[in-house]
Image 1 (cartoon, one colour):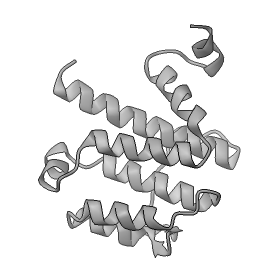
Image 2 (cartoon, helix red, strand yellow; image 1 turned 30 degrees about the vertical axis):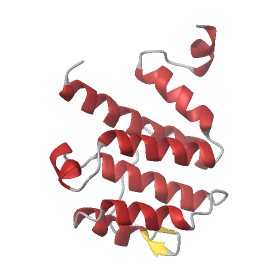
Image 3 (tube, helix red, strand yellow; image 1 turned 180 degrees about the vertical axis):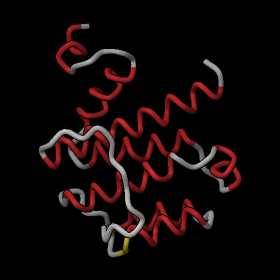
Length: 143
């Protein structure tokens, strides 16, 4: 797998995790999760837009630390906002991430930790099965 293929693969996994998470949390099927910049979401006592602005300014580690420091893992809106944070971060160019001491693998690790701690660890298995070409969780478990 080339570097570009790996980057695309990680981005697909992250987007799929967010899509499945939203579908499970909100009870309806999402084809994709599109985020408006001024969406009003708050997480850890801050507006999501503020954290996204920090990402844009290259303060990625600081933004992630603020996101996670008081995240309420039992609050669906907080989990949704955190998932959008990681999806937004995954859409940044690899060069930008590297320049600011971050990587696409760290983004994947962050959203994976979020899902596990929020009680959605099964989503990771579902998504990994879907991304590698297995369409349903039950088919995944048959292997």
